[in-house]
Length: 380
Image (tube, rainbow, N blue to C red):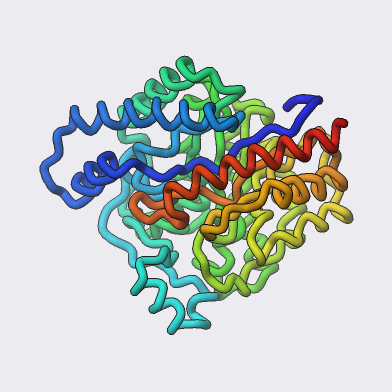
């Protein structure tokens, strides 16, 4: 953080270049792929995406999650115990509007089903090759571009359980604990490399209308408490100021009328270890929730990173609107405890961008300009 301006960042995933995407899709389909060529392409494109973020003024940058098929299902490549296929849970809000959901599929839209492989055996670290390569690529890119700061994403134990159904452990509690223990080395390796660790935790909000649509809010909050307890335990060796946590209600252009309210989650989420909390704050369902912090006291050590650009709309936000959004948060929690971010990632699943790639960069430029405007007004 700084004491003179609002810093800028985003949630992590960025649109993958066409050539890289084609290689990743070929590998996922089981087609022959030159492994060395793919590795070189990832290295080169990570360097390019970090440089581009710095050039447009993003302060805390990511590697774009360029090596991963998605922010959650990548773990099946790095951990043992996963196989088979899980069709997933259909989002409850889309279940209420089935014709619209079918329309989304027809036009190639992202429809969340929370499906991946299944847990069919003991979960443990398979190997660290992919992680080691990610860290090496990102270190080199950051050293060359010299951003203000850098973060790397990792899945939360809870979101792994949402996307990869348990068919092995006797209870969900045991499954969550096993996943948390298996992810702990990845968390600690990212922190040890000098990066901020971002925990992606849509299970804390989106999980309500996906895997847990059958529960009451009170029972769902028990799931949230369990997942956060496992996460906190896995983070026990990492300083809180080195950890960010992203919660969201699903990065898809649905009605979202089944989203659980932020105010029902705040007590649990704000008690979690990560210092930085990334929230949706730009889309029509959650923009109003800045006002939650009028009545919910933000702990002194916490920093809010609200989304000030939407990650499902191709509208390019006006910088003045971005500034207004930031000033609202600053007005209730203080200018030193606000950072500018995005609602979610811009390519959470490889090959399914929610915003056209060219427009993503213009939205990020608008975020940077809006933060500059807000900083000028907040600091004078």
